[in-house]
Length: 93
Image 1 (cartoon, rainbow, N blue to C red):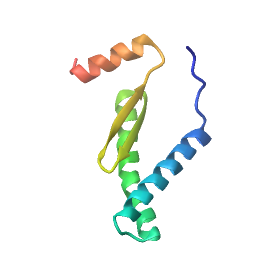
Image 2 (image 1 turned 90 degrees about the vertical axis):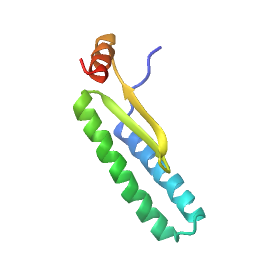
Image 3 (image 1 turned 120 degrees about the horizontal axis):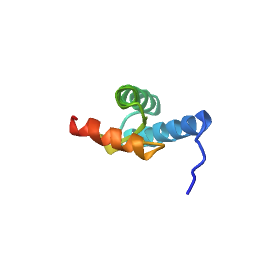
Image 4 (image 1 turned 120 degrees about the vertical axis):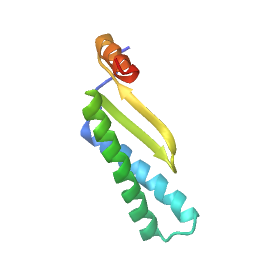
């Protein structure tokens, strides 16, 4: 199965959706709309920096989805050789 390559616009839309969901959660905790948006952006910046560090370290596309401190890390590879290299890196070999 082939997946289409995601564009920068796709990633930007995903980021905006994430920020909106996070801000909504924060508003539910009592923050004003402006405070919630600011805090969501600040926290996302930390996740984004971690994502960039992982991408550089692994040499692969990495996506981190964070929802109030819980989430997942998605590592994309294009070839089985890339996957084997990733496993070796994670195993410290």
